[in-house]
Amino acid sequence: MYDGSVPEISRFFGIVVFMNYNDHPPPHFHVRYAEQKAIVAIESPTLLEGHRLRLTFDDGVEGVVDVATMVRFTGVFEPLRDPAFFEQAKVNEEFGTVCWPNDADLDTDVLYATVTGVPLPEYVHARGRT
Image (cartoon, rainbow, N blue to C red; front, side, top):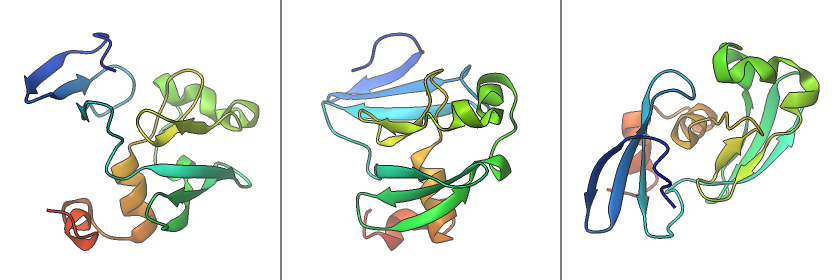
């Protein structure tokens, strides 16, 4: 549920759009509708050597991402540099993405595009969504 900790941009027909601006760059938007999960959700992350994760998505797609190539270990991501902290990765049940105890998270859409190799603007249509 939206808790008011980030700015709410819009609310219509039960859909809430809000902006996260201070957890990690760049500022980004999340959209929630009632108790619905994200369109693309991660079922489980498996830790691999280094800063790599094997991800399984809710549609059966699997793949490996190297987090060290996706983020700079500064700001909210700085603790992830420590392997012991990185190993605390888990799935955020509300958003269906990978997160850590300090509230750092990775955008599910970006992870899915990275795993599939399909650019962000096109992957929604590739999965049969409009």
